[in-house]
Image (cartoon, rainbow, N blue to C red; front, side):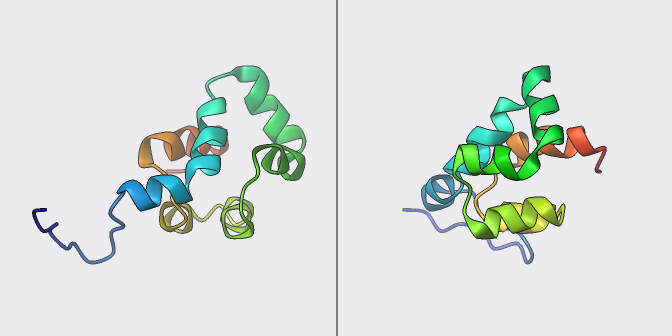
Length: 89
């Protein structure tokens, strides 16, 4: 397997990260629906439980910690949906 370049401060999104972030990314994908975005805003904790987020992922959601979400397996494309709900850059 070819070696991956190392860029300080980045998280390589590989198979292990994809598995770790499955629930988080599935939740963020659900934000394609306006009804789901509204449901998240109405009850963030319940919405996260519905998708089975880990405590690390849930804490990063609560803290709006995008870098923490990347480290917890978040895919940048799906996290953009979450950031868009909150108006985050």
